[in-house]
Length: 241
Image (cartoon, rainbow, N blue to C red):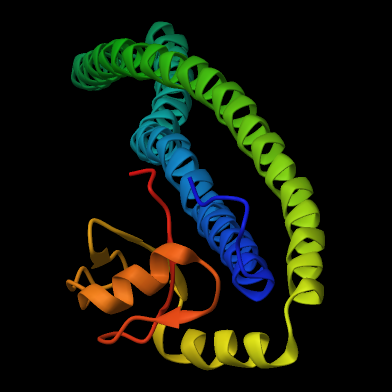
C-alpha cells in the first residue's frame, strides 16, 4: 500500500509507469498474434502438403489407367479384325499365323486388364485416403478460422484497452512537473521499461540492491522523488509485496 500522502510528482510518475508497463505488456501480446496465427496455419498447411503429395502420387496412376483403357480398346479392335479375316483364309500356314495374332491380342488384353484392375484398387485406396485428408482439412480449416477469430476478438479488446491507457498516460504526464517528466525520460533511456519501482524490505526492486538505511527511510515517506543509489531508478515505498 503506497499511502495517501504521496508527493504529486512521484504519484504522477507511478501512474505513468503503471500505464507504460501495461502498454508494453499489451504490445508484447499483440506481437504474438501473427506468430500464433502462423502456428495454427501451419497445422492446416501440413495436411495440405500431405494432400498434394497424394495427388502427385495418384495423377500418373490415373494417366496410366487412361493409357490402359485405350490400349485395351486398340487390342480389341485388332482382335476383331483378325477374327473377321479367319473365314477367308485359304492356306493352313496363313490360318495358324492369324491364330497366333489372335492369341497375342488376347494375352495383351488380359495383361492390360490385370494391370488395370491393380491400378483401380490402388487408386481407390488413395482416393479414400484423399477423402479422409480432405475431411480433416475442412475440420482443421474451420477450427483455424474459429481460433483465429477468437484471437483477433481478444486482441481487439486489447486495442480498446490501449486507447484507455493512452488517456491515463496523458493524464499522468499532465499531472507531473516538467522536471519530473524530464527525469523520467532520462532514466527510461537507460533503464526502460522499469523507471519507477517500489522499494521493499530495504531493497530496490529494480536492481535488488540493498539501499542505505537513510535512503530507505527517505523513500518510505514518499514525500519526494528519491533515486536508487545503484541503478538510479525512481523509488517509492510500497508495503504490499
